[in-house]
Image (cartoon, rainbow, N blue to C red; front, side, top):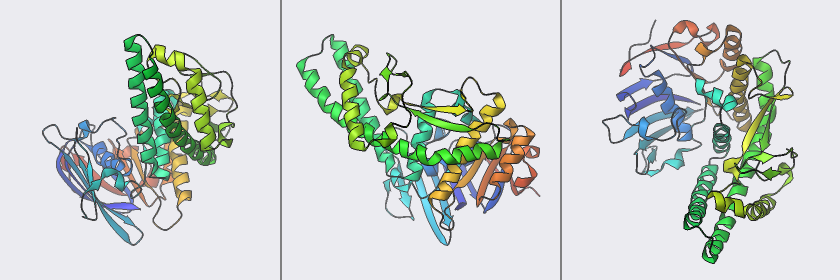
Length: 394
């Protein structure tokens, strides 16, 4: 698939931007701060309803604008789909598909698939577990768009349960009323948590061979890369909600959603006193982690800078391979976005990555200097200037 037309209104630095795009490689070139990333960020938002740079929508709307509009025309084989997203900070975002009546923004999920590489991806390896949880949750939505509801349902229940635990902690005593209400929220959270955990595990199981293959493709293949899911359902949970001990990483994959629900209920009961004392939920997918292993050691803290970059790229490239295999129909392959990545890579990694992604139906690249782009990604060049674009460079 590919985007052949993009229009931005009140989005980031653009009062109005209209750009026609083609299949193949397009490189957006311009000094830092001119708005290159804003363009590809908007396309990434079409696919995930989130930004790879910020956690809320407010920064996406121009400072003096009340809302932002992203309009795009998506080509998939012989089919063309028009998408319009209306970003309304503090209010509900809306969408239109093929100029029909407005619907919830969530309805556009699945229409556009992207895989985005960015310098921020280093946090997948070096950063906190939250970045890796988000990676997994974005993946499950890319594979099965209805899991956007799975994700939001869990977040809603978690918020309510935490509010109750905080209330009990503030009151200084845990009453029978608190107990009865907490039991209800335990049930809701166990069901929602089991559904989210099962989706994560299924996606990780499918990703694993593609991750391993991607790391081999990007390196000399002397070390193997893999990812291990660490759940608060396994082993003992310490006061920070982290799993201690050395649980069997394969155990959870054998459990059904019903069995996972029962495990959560038992874990809530076992940690009741500690959760009341802390005023927060210590067990659940919101506390889990994805441990990245390179060779025999954790990548975090042990991998070199180059290996860390290769692992981060492999997670994204593995996602690309997985999405390709998930839907092999003509025009179904995801759009690849490489946002200011090549300036961060050595020559060998630039060459390997460029050679792998060059064959995608559409590749969108940003760079401050055109010389950073490997020859394998030669294509149309669009010069970005403050507030807009100039004519394509010759």
